[in-house]
Structures are given as C-alpha cells and as structure tokens.
Image 1 (tube, rainbow, N blue to C red):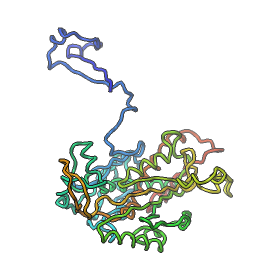
Image 2: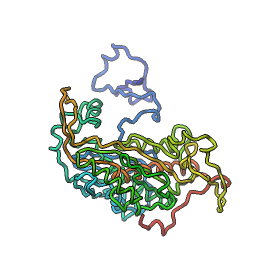
Image 3: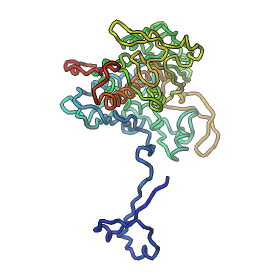
Image 4: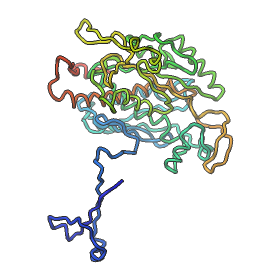
Amino acid sequence: MASSSTLTSKSFLDSSRIDTAPLSSAHLRKLSISSVQISFRSRLPKKLQINAAGSTFGNNFRVTTFGESHGGGVGCIIDGCPPRIPLSESDMQFDLDRRRPGQSRITTPRKETDTCKISSGVSEGQTTGTPIHVFVPNTDQRGFDYNEMSVAYRPSHADATYDMKYGVRSVQGGGRSSARETIGRVAAGAVAKKILKLYAGTEILAYVSQVHKVVLPEGVVNHDSLSLDQIESNIVRCPDPEYAEKMIAAIDAVRVKGDSVGGVVTCIVRNAPRGLGSPVFDKLEAELAKAAMSLPATKGFEFGSGFAGTFLSGSEHNDEFYTDEHGRIRTRTNRSGGIQGGISNGEIINLRIAFKPTSTIGRKQHTVTRDKKEIELIARGRHDPCVVPRAVPMVEAVVALVLMDQLMAQYSQSYLFPINPDLQEPLTMPRPEAANASV
C-alpha cells in the first residue's frame, strides 16, 4: 500500500509551517535523532481500508466475539445497542441454554452451564447505549485430549489452515475455530431478537429440516403457525414428531460408531419490517448469507425457492401481487423468500443452511503432522455426532444480528425525515407496556 511520509523536528513545531519538501542527507545529519518525528499517512480513504481482524460483525449494531474453546472463557462486546431497553442475563441465558453442550445424548458430552454475566452497558436493568460486555467462563476444559492433535492435523478441520495463515495456533479444542466462539453470537443475537420483537413484532425461528438422508418434506411445517414450543419438543429440534424420531435414530446410528453426519437448518422470519437491505453489494440476502456462512461447519446457503427455482419458468416462479383486506400490498406466493431486489418486502423470510458432518470423529484417518510426516490419527475429545440440533439457536442469532443492523440502517437513512405515506409504512414503535414484557 502506497503511503506518504512527513518529517518534522522539534524546531519546526513552534512554526505554523510544516516543511514537507524532500530533505538532503546533509540536512538529515544536522538533525538530532531524538528530535526527529516521522508520521505516515495512508493515501487510501479510511472507508476503503480493510479490517482484517475478522471477529467483528455489523456496522450500526456491532458485535465483537472473543475467547477460545479451552481458554478462560468466551463472550462478546455489543456496541451500538439502543439505550433504555430492558435487559438482563436471563434474556440471553434462554438461548445460551439451547446452544450449550451436554444437553442430550446426541450432542457433545462436554458439561458446561454456559452461565453469562453482563459487566457493562446495563444499569438498573436497562441498556445505557454504551458497549455491553458479556462473559461466559469455560469450566470443563480437557486440554490433554488434544495432545496428539497438537502435532497432527485433523482432516477437514481448521488446524492446518490456521497454521498456514498465522504460523501458530491454539491447539486445545481448535481455539477460535471451535463452536464455543458462537456463544458470543448467541448472546448478542438474543439482545437483537428482543429489540426486533419489541420494535416491530418480528419473530425469528429456526428448526432442523434434514439430518443426513432424513429430509423433512416441503410443506409439512406450517410457517404461519410454527411455534418455539413445537421446535423445542424434542432433542433434535425438528417440529414434526415423526421425522424427529427418524433424525434422532440417524444420529444414534453414527454416534455409536464414532462417526458423524451433517444436516440442514431452516430459518424463518415473520413480521420483518419492509425496506431492510440495500441494492447491489449490501442486499439483504447477501448479508444473511455472509452471517450464516460464517458459522462453523456451514457448507451451503439458499433462500426462497433456492436452487429448486431453477427448474421453474418465469411464469411459474413469479410472485404475483395483490392488495389484502388491510390495504397492504402482498404477494400470493413467496418463492422470493421475503426478499426482492435485495430488500425485504414484508413476507416471511425463509432460508436454509447446510452443515457438514462434524470433522473431529473417533475413527482412524490418514493425515500428516506439522513436520509433514504421514500418520494415522484417531481424534480424541468430546464432539457432536451432528451439529445441527445445537446450530438452531446459532442460526437464529446471526439472522437477528443482520436484521437488527439493517433496521438501524433503514431508520437512519430512510426514516430520518417524514416518509412517503403512499409508498412507505412507518416502522412500528414499541409500546411502553411491551417494553417491560418478557421476550
């Protein structure tokens, strides 16, 4: 990257003039080293510079996660949260309990309570508008399980690529590549879900729609009436009892063999405000895809008709408009998945995320060591035979983070001045009684 440099000395500081002309070597020798100050200014505009840290998401509702699987703990910092929102640890704990390990026989046996603690940004039960710090301690670490994996790469895991990128890595539990990193996202997502529900009545629900070869048929789940109780009625988080049993059996079959399987999580958003998202690069589906694909083990994303829409003609695929009994413009079908032109249209947003089989398995596999010797490895440690049951609250969380960020962007850009009532709907404001309700 090109940069410009300015050389000044203490003798110049009292002057209103800063000499930026090139200096000869003779001039340089006359200057005392202790008095020389060198500053570098990038020629790139700030907005074009790249933040390569990779642990922060969002622009308006900004979340940074921290911590590692076998370190002291994990958590997040939420920056940009609106003030005066009722908030406590219990608002986050519900979803953290849905995400935590050891909750059933088809999840990792690692025992963690994942109890969260808010240490800033909340005063007397309300958000203050300042950064919210959330911390969850690790209490059941077993670093010795990873002695062999500290020198050998687990096939299809991030071990090798972390070494290739950084030249060093946290060998216990996979460090930042571990799914324990998602605790921070789930905690922040719970805050976003609460605000979206209070502000616009928005509901975000995810469920397991496929485990290995067990696929929930299209149309079995009614997205208009789907409830959280239906999803949480079984350990695999599939709202259909018959297919839930088949999915659990599929996971059990590989679990006892030390193997793993993948699956698909479907997520729907009801009552999403209209107008979220922007044309071209920041389309709502693009933001959702980035957030979803940043989750561990994800391998695919589709929304609306997805890849199946390629089998239809335009006349079959188009969502025709009509005016409902309340005078609102609606679509008769929803193959667009609630998003058209990169902008939400008020219909149910629906998307599907594919998760690969868990990489760390208890079966012998061929690999290489850090010093490039070929060996056979049986990975140890405690891992999910299928990640999708615990991925459900993770998916809900990242979708909520995107929508919250987009809601604040929409409000600041398109609702700063009076709206065009012929074409726009007002964003629903929370009622005082609703602000104190439990979400």
